[in-house]
Image 1 (cartoon, rainbow, N blue to C red):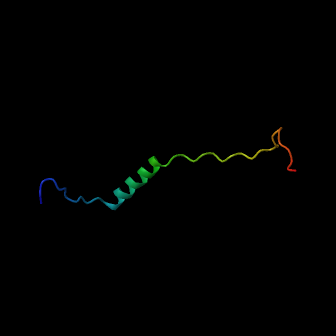
Image 2 (tube, one colour):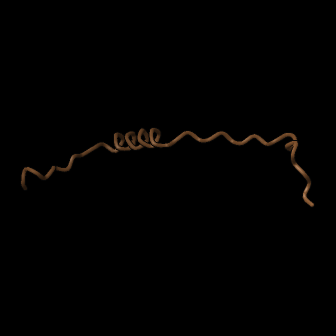
Amino acid sequence: MSASQTQPVQVPMRDLLAACAAARTLSTPPRAPEPEPRQQPAPHHRDAA
């Protein structure tokens, strides 16, 4: 094996899962707030013909 090749590293499953959870938390944008339903129609609203 040459010096440029890397050796496999053993990582405990617990650490791997924790790293994945942290990455998911950081990379997931916050959810947009749910749109609030209008209580009254807009003043320029007309009924369909």
